[in-house]
Image (cartoon, rainbow, N blue to C red; front, side, top):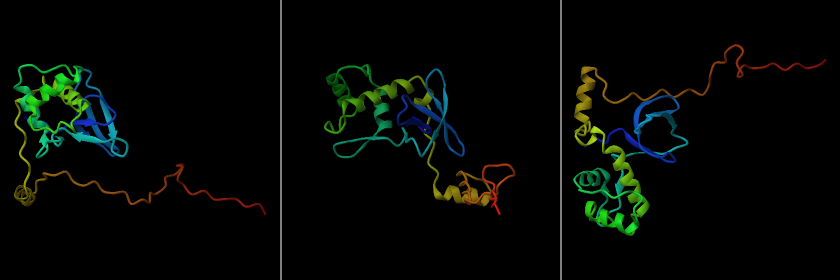
Length: 176
């Protein structure tokens, strides 16, 4: 299963695919039928990659990807709007070691909704890309290839004013 690049954004319903980055934030495309695109400014919104999300467990946290895999093998997935008892019984099947006191029904509803969004996508048949280790990065650096994106240059804070811009220095006139 490949969840890389699939993100949830705080305050926005649904899931998004990360398609790029610009100076102000990240460019996302909705996974719904409308395929709406939006730019998310990182100072205003929080993004969470589905690949990194975990669910509270009794012994250790459970990875969302593992829960999705069990859900894909499940015969019937309840409606996210089902009553709390139905959702809790379903979660006992797909995530038997989840912490029932800290995982709320609202979390269960969100996970089922996310699963329903990604289920028709080829995510379940794709293999997750292997993480890049230090040796691979060093070997690529020797060959002159770039693996990791370059860090953007930070602005110096001092910008040269252009003629007619609002940042040009104005001279004051004194009456004599």
